[in-house]
Length: 434
Ligand code: TYD
Ligand code: MG
Image 1 (cartoon, rainbow, N blue to C red):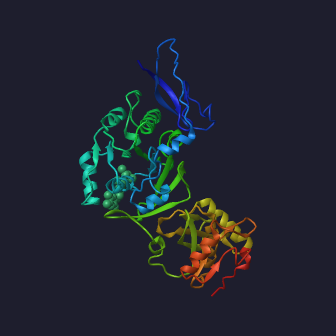
Image 2 (image 1 turned 90 degrees about the horizontal axis):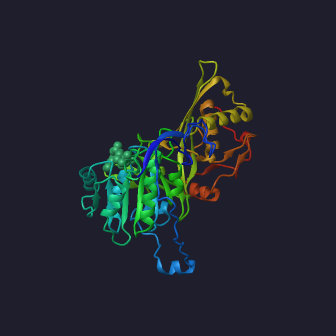
């Protein structure tokens, strides 16, 4: 019989402790211990297993198993997953509430070539069915499972070969072997363990939905990310229509691809040319600079806007949207030092249009040029696109996939490329004052 008592569970490494501590004694992370109920599994006293582990010749495996990815019939999703869904794989799709996880999986369910089972633990089957019908009138028949208990879910599956199981979401399912409520770190860990074990012992492929916390990390133990085969994240700004799907971990393929979608009234639409959406309604004014960032293996043109105005307060403001504020502080310091632009009395606001979050340091040069252009109240020459990482000494450095970026910029007709190929230092770039 399981006995239950209170324990403290590390959300980072998954270890359990009898006492709370500010720092996890095992993984040394701070503030990761959360209170949880523990289950002590009492086994038969003195029982020792005599079962032997099976030894399999690696060469014989590939002959029999068909582990070719199965296409999802959604091009952008296939691109991110490295060709499709690998049989027996366990996938985790994470994202903020309302970003479109259930929408994407409903579309996948109706397009997937094999049988699909959809566990409606978060919504009712009629809600899921209504969404499926709204997204695709001619949606194929999908098996909806109205249960949240893992064992009963797997018992009810009459699986045909290479079927797809969608569990929406890991925070709302539970296993009876763990008495804690659904969504607790130990429940998520035990449920995920059971899902993975059952998937590997069947001919299923499983996709699990995972919510993210306020801080942006996947809710539940960090362990969850180690357990599954593939972790993807759907991100974007809910007030804009663009959604990006990144792979964080992929045991079956590369992690450098990004799928680009647009949220419409008919669900998520694949976007072949995201730059067109990002640059819609753009004017070539002072404070605007185009840059190309590499999203996966594709360069994406985005607009960086800056507004530099005299500050009314002793410590001027640095407000950033779409880039981190520490990056803005750094670029402001580099601009002040190396171009003699007196920003210490100016408020600087920077915005990346389209709700895109730029993490690529290759956008540094464009941020600097947008700031200088706004300060001098002078637009950059038409057809300008800038990319390059800025060093603290003002040097302009190479960017990821530079050759591809240059090629793409030429194809798109940008004839004034400011990059590490044309300039080595920020002070070599002159923006003439009006
Ligand atoms: P949903 O997939 O339910 O989000 P998640 O599962 O990640 O929490 O998507 C919710 C949002 O998507 C909702 O705010 C409305 C929007 N949406 C559309 O704009 N068009 C659609 O066709 C659908 C299904 C949703
Ligand atoms: Mg949902």
